[in-house]
Length: 87
Image (cartoon, rainbow, N blue to C red; front, side, top):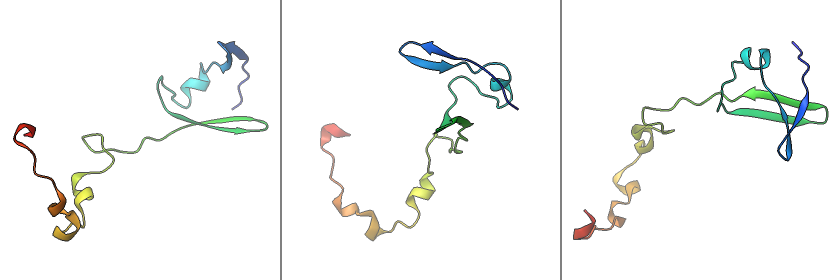
């Protein structure tokens, strides 16, 4: 599907309004991350698929971070002892 629209001035830059089917068909939402591919003939805009994160919104779980850790690789001997006021 092709849509014609107009490039408009927006502050010191230029803007393309993403409305109607340009917004609805790809299900664009406000704040959504997109990827813009720029070439000599124009632009290609794609949604960025968010990576699934664990319940704490971190990219790795505790189990994944500790996988393969041993007493030798943990360097527990290098951990400083906290002072009384640091607890």
